[in-house]
Image 1 (cartoon, rainbow, N blue to C red):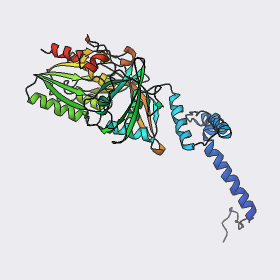
Image 2: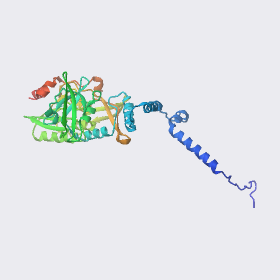
Image 3: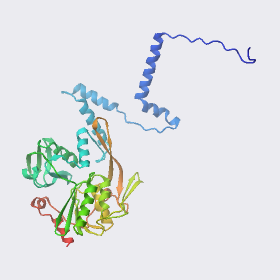
Image 4: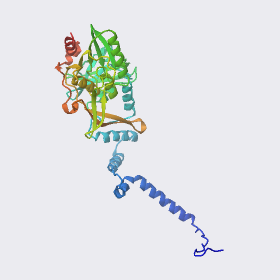
Length: 403
């Protein structure tokens, strides 16, 4: 029986499609999908605003392809595509115009991570820093290859293994100097008007980030970097100092280029409790505020902090906060002035992208980058000649203040 008012459906017979037509349709679909995928930024740029989508444009990399094609067609030699790509990555990141935003290749990334993990590996026993815009030997460590070979503080580093390094950062030069124990490294330096070459065999360097020695009733805590172990090592050192009944401390931050912010927080918490240490800002907006922890084993202990032109970043956080709260007297020379913070991002192939993500401010809204570093309470110059002769005027002044 039929339902009234409802049409009777007629059977639907599917139309047949030829194999040829099917292949044509499939090919068109593949092409459309490919174009949509490879040119999605352009497509989003066209339709995005109409759909309320946020649009960010990438640079036009066709010019890079043009350079590659020209190089490939004209270069008299063999090109290594992997090296070209790594070089392009470095160049692109360098275009950001920020000294601290850098791309590290696989080898550089591995060395960088080892540093932050506290594994300094093998080397020649030198501290490398920047003086007058030149990478120099800041000091040599006792009983290590560099000192035995005759390398001196103040030597300007020109080459490592005959590779010109004058355009590199101190950190990059340090990484090139390091290597496997038992391997040789050639260092070319400028000393006065003379160029000198030193060939040395790398040795395993036992250099913990925190070391404590004693001069009478004064503890001298040297912190060379802020790695993953620094906070625990500094806390153990502080407990040992208190156990010995020592109530005068010198903190030596000279040559300390920084490291983990958490390390700075943990070291400051040896003296301060629940105090604002520093504030992170990006584009003027506050991202985070870091305060001291509750336990402060060195609270009330008379303290002097030694600083110089290579005292940077996390070590400036420590020096600046202790100075601000009048917990310590700073002796030495104006610090480096690095008021920015970086985060790291792993990339394909084992590389690492280090990006400036924020700026940090001491209490009082002070950015050390803007201020050109932290000025010590008492300025004491230390020449390379003083260092090479073992005449540490800055340490002597600190000891004098603690008498």
